[in-house]
Each structure stands twice: as structure tokens, then as C-alpha cells.
Length: 182
Ligand SMILES: [Mg+2]
Image (cartoon, rainbow, N blue to C red):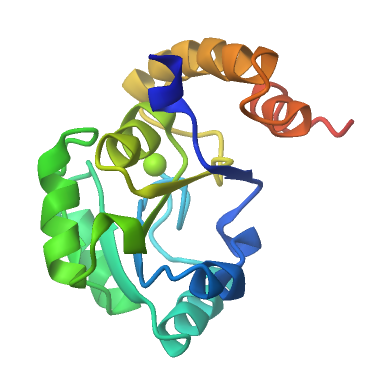
């Protein structure tokens, strides 16, 4: 059961995702979460570094798709800014939005990567669909009250994953004590 929550990789940010390595492994499609993955939950504009990363991914031949549980208007705005198709109101971890994303991308599950900041939506959903899952640290600490509640549960699972050796101690430390370097 705990394995359903285990990401294939844990990284500090989207910018650390090694696109060349993913390409070499045969991945062709990237499903990206929006809030606290691409940009702060409370912000509207992706940073220049995120824009550059997205351009690099496109230039590298990756197909990209956004999936977000956020409202349509916000998702549509980000989709326009980044020129990437999007699925709004996704209700991750349901399988449906991931199936829709695969259809948009034109890739199979074994060719597709999910990148997101939440275990209960992005990683659980991606694992249920047998996609390659990358958990990144949230861009900012501000989020929905409901998300803050879920984060408490998330921290418990992170501790268990770390104890069992499924994720590294340093990745767990970053999630459990954000802002504190070891
Ligand atoms: Mg998110």
C-alpha cells in the first residue's frame, strides 16, 4: 500500500529534472502539475527559469500536458502563457485525467512522466497509471487550507517511505523541514 505513494524520484525543484536522462530512458511525454510545481499557488506568472525549462523540454522533443485540480480559468491562463494543453478540474488521483493526458500527449504509460508536488494527487495518480513519477518540493509554502491538512498526512507517509528506504533521508528531510539545510 505504502508503495503506491512512492515516487520514482524526489527532487528539490522542476529545474532539477534531468530532461536528457529522461529522453535517454525513452520517455516522450511529461504531465506537469501547476500549483506549487510550476508556479506558487498564490502566483500567476511562471518564473523565467521555469519558462526556460519548459522551452528546453519542448525543444528536446517532449510532448507536454498540464493537469491541475485548480479551477478552469486559472488553468487556462497558465496553459496560454506556456502554450501547453491542459486538463483543469482534474480531481487527481483519479485515473481519468491521466488517461486524458496520455491521449493528448499521444504516449503510452511507459513513455510518460508525471511531475508534481503532492503525494496524494500527482504521485498516487501517476503510480496508479504506472507512469514514471517525480515528486518535487513545493515552490512555496502558501496553499489551500485543505492542502495544508493533507500535508500533515503526507509528512507521515514521507517518514514511513524514508524509514523503509524507499526515498532518501535527504529528500525526506527537505520535505519535513523545509527551509532548513542539513
Ligand atoms: Mg500541486
